[in-house]
Length: 274
Image (tube, rainbow, N blue to C red; front, side, top):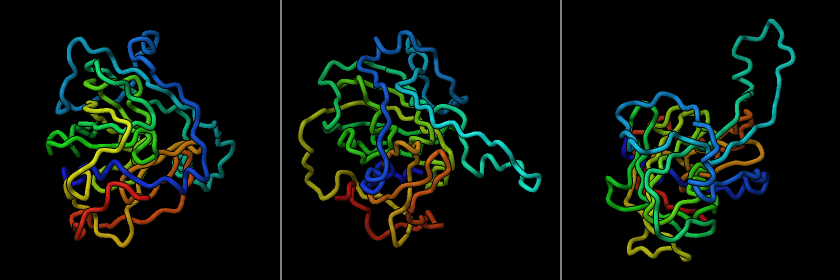
């Protein structure tokens, strides 16, 4: 499980950005001000394996909510099966990126086009820990808002400052979509405990050729696919990865990951692509 490492978060989004536009979303400029009037988010029951939040932490609340276009199934022939709605990818519910601020930071404010150093641990709803920079002892560097990470990360640090800690509840539409990706099951909500370690105006310089230790990746002649987003806005994901289906059921062209996730490649992919 831990072999996914930080590579699981990156992707190239240039082709998608040429086809789509990002929706207008309302970010939390200040967690304390923006969430005061928000109702608690409805989330699935989380495993007790996931560390409990502090007793004084607030309930999860939306950082922003997306309303996908409404599409109704007006008629279906009796020849069609009962799963037609799911097969067509018709989504009727809204999509929210929910969060809980665990600790308020006192350092520099996170802002788009800044470079962030982030410590994080990622869990599935069942408590499976699938990745952790904390366990590796090295934070992950990202260009915030640059479409190089899943949309739940590309937009999930609004209102945070250096030293701040947050739990993010990333729905599958803002993560890896409705299909299996490596050890991430289809339609998986991801729970991240994140900490902003550093905010800078320039990209960090690393002594080695990669911004993170080597990782194992599925054996494939092309980079694996990941990510999913609303039709009008698509997140990006991991280094060397493409894109996966949108929540409305459309499927952009994408490479096919290996069926044998236990077979590593000879070398890890780069952390970003030009």
